[in-house]
Image (cartoon, rainbow, N blue to C red):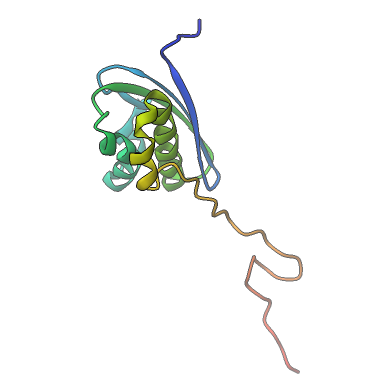
Length: 131
């Protein structure tokens, strides 16, 4: 069943995880069974997600199907961007310098800070009363 020309990559951002299957094609982009613009709804998120494709001029040369889970739309768009960059690098290792110089292969490690005991949030404190 496995096709030899399919490239699989994973991208993560915040709580979002995106699995990508990329193959040579005509530029079809599907995210969770929907068109890319229909899924993300905002042009800013679509631009962020497609940045690796635009940088490498591969938008009309490959098809990809993405499965997004967790997080919000912004985190999923960032995860999709990282996953696409990784998949493009697997497809053509010569693209690594171009993608790397733009910071598209770097995993953004910023995560939500955990809540601490004795206070209502990660940093917020309960109200202090002197008397």
